[in-house]
Image (cartoon, helix red, strand yellow):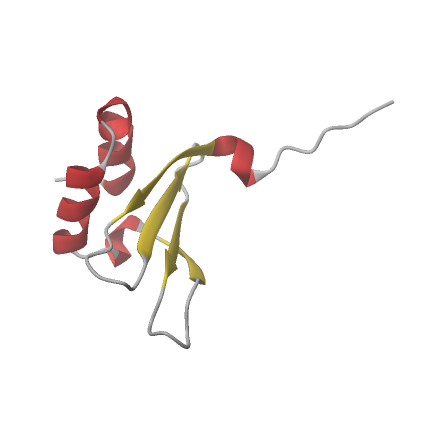
Length: 84
């Protein structure tokens, strides 16, 4: 008997980068409304990961996320972010 455990990767909706320079800053959205942020602080501190709530994302960054969001996911991502 095989039991398959569903991982978050299977529930991923999309990954949206809002990087504006060589430091990475991306948000990964999941079907269960969870949001993972992967970002770089500097050249010695990169790929930091944290789980965040929509209220922790600034209006400015929410604007960037929606602007960079693929059209087919935009409505779903806006709901998760409680945007606008």
